[in-house]
Amino acid sequence: MASPGPGFWPFGGEEAPSDPDNPTTAKAWCQVAQKFTGGISNKLCALLYGDAERPMDPGSKEGMCPEDNRAPCTCDQKPCTCQKPEINYSLLRSTDLLPASHGEAATMAFLQDVVDVLLQYVVRTFDRSTKVIDFHYPNELLQAYNWELSEKPEGLDGVLLNCKTTLKYAIKTGHPRYFNQLSTGLDMVGLAADWLTSTANTNMFTYEIAPVFVLLEYVTLKKMREIIGWSGGTGDGIFSPGGAISNLYAMLIARFKMFPEVKEKGMASLPRLIALTSEHSHFSVKKGASALGIGTDSVILIKCDERGKMIPSDLERRIIEVKQKGFVPFFVSATAGTTVYGAFDPLIAIADICKKYKIWMHVDAAWGGGLLMSKKHRWKLNGADRANSVTWNPHKMMGVPLQCSALLVREEGLMQNCNQMHASYLFQQDKHYDLSYDTGDKALQCGRHVDIFKLWLMWRAKGTEGFEAQVDKCLELAEYLYNKIKNREGYEMVFNGKPQHTNVCFWYVPPSLRNMEHNEERMSHLVKVAPVIKARMMECGSTMVSYQPLGDKANFFRMVISNPAASFQDIDFLTDEIERLGQDL
Picture 1 (cartoon, rainbow, N blue to C red):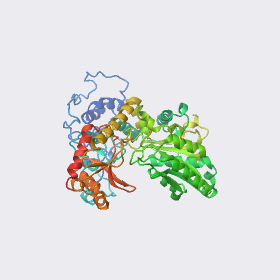
Picture 2 (cartoon, one colour):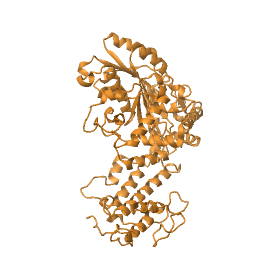
Picture 3 (tube, one colour):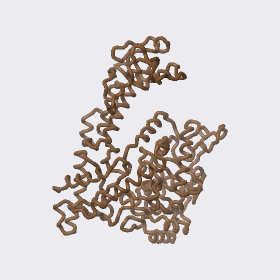
């Protein structure tokens, strides 16, 4: 169907103003805006039609169109469900929205309806009576809707339906009973900041196109370096697309620091390099070695104790071993908050070893970095200030909307020297401002998303104290769960002792297995329990929690808490639900 012509007016019962630029007919546009945007329309009309300078008396009717003096809706329903004039979106296309001529009213009405869809989803997210997930198998979803792309444009009615359908089957990661990943929760200020970021729609590579965002990144990274313990917040850093890329940056910079010639001559000019990390570390260390041409065989996994912490004596033993073979250990990645156990490597002992053998020390604190905000728990990262680089993901324990990951580097200028390519068409050297704020040449990416505003605005809204309270609460909930199940019938802890992070690892043992001898037969049954319970959780949509094997340990549940909305009630619900779903196994 062809897009309607310029005289078309989709707002029920109204006639299109003949000339919206004419002051006489501008009021008709204002009237429509008032109907479809409520209280914000007065300001929008003023901005659109040149009356922005004149303050408006909130009690005056002068600012409203004479044909419609109704005040904005003041109902107490959240979100508002009051009836609004209908728009025939089937007759509208995206080409009828701004920047189309006279597209202001249609744009405001459409975006308001999109916002209504989003707000309804937000409210449902925090409603414990709603499902965490409306699970369907992939083939069912593929067959239930037409997801294919077509040559012809779809009407805006279809676009709105697409929005609703997508959210219908989305996982409510902000739901108080969603415990599946390290990144959970839905912060309202962070959400608002994300909307603003998308509206600004700019790139982070130069100050000239992202002046405020670049300055906020500078200020925030400096603050984060101060919190780590680097004097005066000196050093460098960047926000990257997740912890895996931050770890890759760290390995890249460590290699350049030891062998700067690699930038021009490549790996063929170097001896065999060795990276060392714990056997419980994140897979991104190996992935980074693969991407940089170092190779996964050149990543040595250091033994951990029963709590998942790297054993420093084994680290030193392996360093001596590879040096005797003529290889060059250049990078040690310690972990502050392992993915499964939530373990914190002994950073001070590792720092001593790295200093002794002149090896770059990196701390992957993607998961545990948030504890630096807590006076009660930051001791678990003692020694992080001695690292050469630190990965810290605020989108995990700090609850910043995805994605928000920072790499912090102690030596200023090293990242720039490692990555810069002097692209003169973008990073001109004769600009009229301080070029140190053109951050793009120190990044691997050219196009870089604005990830800073969410964190900065949340920090302003909460203060450091707010983040501290949030982190402390999550760890308190984890300790509550541990104390609840450690001696409870039907539960076995994967390791002994109170968890250091919010990771609580356990097996649920159904009644049929509780009196069995601990042998291979029992384990062959136990390994199937967590996957079945997880599948049942998803199919009924009640909650979500992760499971996995690790080493010689069969599938066990790994509970993690990073959602500020979670409560003691939700922890109780989780254990009750696991028991309900697993009783018959």
